[in-house]
Image (tube, rainbow over the protein chains, first blue to last red):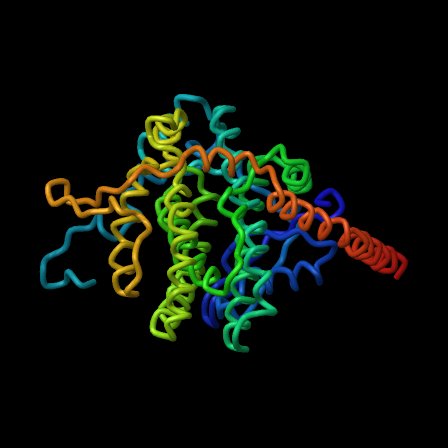
Length: 94
Length: 309
């Protein structure tokens, strides 16, 4: 079954003003039926106002073993964060 | 990633995600558990589905239809989580159909009366929730996320079930007697849903070390009894256990040992009801074959047209 029906990743916009967020996946023959399945599976209780489905095979993902080299350097750069600047109490809300 | 990195993530109570390296046994344990969980959801549609056409009002029909549809959805979330571990959904369904993977033995009991629908929602879904809430923090990310969605939806299931029991308990003496019969039928099977006692559950320690399981079977069972007994009292019904008594010293209920021989028989899945569950499921799958094929044929034709255009 799933050999014939490819996998689609489903993204839901919870309400206007928010981005679409990944919620799960469905099997479907094509985009249109993937949307119908996603609607039935993920939005039965007003969870969203808009749906995206994307073929899972089209997702390009970073390599989990590269997690350290990709994301750890940011930890040494505290100066990128506003909290690393101590200011006088009078301007503390800056 | 390596074993050391995996261990470090588990020790830090972080989540493992699909592309991460993981020990074979961790993967196998999860596939077995998630598949069994998914199978239980879709087989669980049957005992209640039998009551949709016979529900006593349009409102109850609508509620029950929504609940059964939720169970199908829960199955889909869980098959999705299992697939993220590299198994194929079709293969999992085959294994359900040829009985090499199990579903929860709770669905091998009959539902002869309307009050059973109430008792299932209240007790069976209640026990499922007690099991599933800690699974929201399971170390495997996709399983935990599926459980969060499921728990959100499951709450309505338990409440509608209890409300059926409440309505019957406040009804005629015959209705109240029917509610009591349903409680008598479902109390022990629900208690046994938490699985064998800790002394007989060899895999619990390993699953807890991996952060798949957060509490032992007996801890969850105790929790369930503590939450449920006051609800029984509110209905004015009686728990079918003469030895059930509040133990002031332990701050817990004492209760009798369930009939584990019956549990073992039900888990084997032999007999009329288990055969009916599997044949119903298999027929639904076979009868849907032409729909699956037609959808693929249509999708291929559309793609060809697009290419020509």
